[in-house]
Image 1 (spheres, one colour):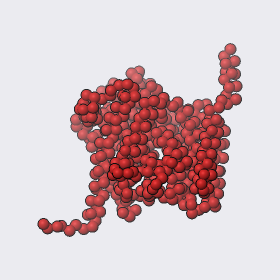
Image 2 (cartoon, helix red, strand yellow):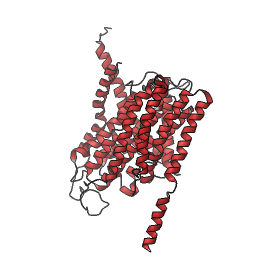
Image 3 (cartoon, helix red, strand yellow):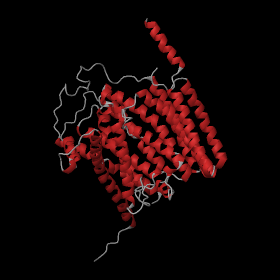
Image 4 (cartoon, chains in turn red, brown):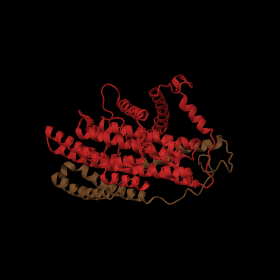
Length: 369
Length: 121
């Protein structure tokens, strides 16, 4: 057997193409089955059965949905900005695919083990906002534009606590490399530390808002603004928005597992399976939220982001600094104390009735009389 | 892999990733029916006659939130390099970043106090 000696750059290229193809092929499949999982779990929560006609347990339902979407007419409104309208669904999917290259699926098993992985994740993740606005503006529909404006406001509001909340992890580990962060969780997952617990809940909340999931699904509040920014999309383009949303959800759950739940760490089972299990468990929690939580009101949503989440994420930075600098129980106590006090004070300031507001209300009633 | 190689990979990945959304859209162009009409192509307004244009001016208030966002996102950008060397920078670094965040927090308190954080006025 004659072995062909390949030059080293060919091996490098093959080493790049294999993970690329794996991610690009598996991510859409994972997304399809995520829709199935979501429909099944939501159905159970609502005392229904969910999809059960196509294949055993409805397992072929996503495939049937895909075929249906392919055969639907692609409508573009007459006055729309054709280029914006076309590019938006394409540009929203690409960043969400990027996110999977950064996650370490095992020791050193990230497709792109960047030293600044954490920052890159946030940077790429926030590109979706642009695509959403392109969709809203390009459609030339009032509901679309309203939805897009709301989404932009929401996404930038929650971007701040998300990014600030992430900063605690490099503070403690001294690295932004996601692989190194998992390495640093040897023996102790970060969720078991006080700053880690706060950070986990901060990022879960802000992350849910970033991927527009309940209770933060105002951009798609169908009872108010039809379908928000994708009102004027049909067929495959419509499906692409859902693909991006589900892929981002999956990537967010993967990031949270990586940062706080020990990533690929776990006994017996192979590393990628552990990451997968933790990710799916987190996704199930998000679906559970969707099944049980009512939707936020727009002013509550913005108030919560700017008045509670933002100071809380800054307090968590202080807490992490205390935890790292003060040894023992006092450090834990200080970290918990700073966050707890901030939370109580800010929620009080946010929600407590303001005296001048009541005065206004009463004067309005008096004027009517 | 060196960092430069990783960025090359990411660039390559970006090009390849375009296939995922473009393939079904192009495929749908061949499979899906195409029967546009003047009524069908009206912007959707719950079945009512279309009134006015959708491309209108925005509420000023969005601008305020955008400015606040820029302030705090840039703050985060400065926080990350500090966070990485947090243990090495020690108390002096902590004090410096504390002053930096403190000044921005004063601005935030002012914005709240002025009602810039209220959605409805």
